[in-house]
Image (cartoon, rainbow, N blue to C red; front, side, top):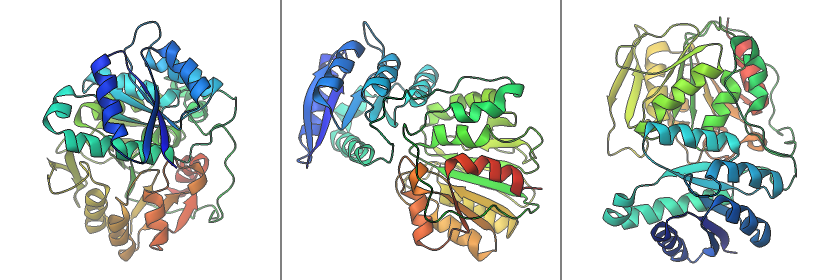
Length: 366
């Protein structure tokens, strides 16, 4: 059955172009369009699409407000379009907090210059979020994350966007972890990762004893804004990694978009140009692999929600060295791709719900 899509954008050109691209896929059906947030809400209620593509800047009602209303009245997976600017990144992160599942850069030049690439990316995103594991159908609103003071940070963990119905416990759920002195915690994620990382990191205490590296599939223009957002929400410190940064307890370094991040035995971070031969920039496998070489069995690696299998081969290298691998369970993932790849390869030492990962990290690291 074709995926039914509602296209929302105040630009007539962009509405037509997105509709044309999606309609060219025989497994996608554009069932309606809207020019502003209010129309989007009405159309979502009337047409019941499987996926909504949403612009942010629109008259009458902006995209974020529309997403919040849709999640309250007729929860539906939303794919946001965003500009490749710092402000565009901030707005996109707000939209993900409001309940949007994923985003794509809104670049008119790419549509003209690389129509086939844009078509492939857009259609893949629509198909993936149509299959996403978000629980829709409840009338409960989707909570949002707001910056918290250190004293409030622990409660912020529950304030992120979450499935609207209770997720069942994973059939692979594992007992609480054993305590160990890890030299590094490495977390890799993709689709659904921004909200998942907020949920995990806001549960960590300011004196968290291990250094952390974060690998989130994200454009170059977005990672700085995302790191700043996490730093405001969390009791630990978070920053976009720079070449030469040193790993230290209580600091999380986020791999910069468009580049690769590696760690060495001295505890220093190396930032390398993104390799065009690699699908992901940053790539979880690259960072995990360097961690295996540098710290052997003293790494705790966590693979969170995301499409694809990035992280599996890096996890394999870590496992061979004796390090620990955790995977997010299917029930709490937006997309159970990356964790599933690790679990199916028998590389996961533990499989935990997103609700438990932050707490267990705080308990496991000494």
